[in-house]
Image (cartoon, rainbow, N blue to C red; front, side):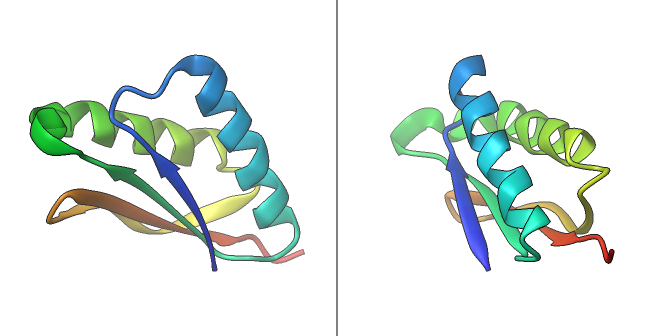
Amino acid sequence: MKEIRFGPNTDDHDYEFKKKHAIKFLSDGAKLKAYVFFKGRSIVYKDQGQILLLRLAQELEEYGKVEQMPRLEGKRMTMFIAPKKK
């Protein structure tokens, strides 16, 4: 199980960098736990966090399939992606 952490206001360059790592993890056969961590008052950006995770799921569609859609647990919104079988 590999984890990738985002903030609710993650920049495009940082997003692409982390997406490359996610592709590598899924290609190696590891499950992926992507989550958005909300610090302090950033919890008001719940919708931005969900959009970020759904965008990641859509762009990683050819490498893995979503096991669990984004779900808010406390200050974290988590999503699980399993690698596709070869």
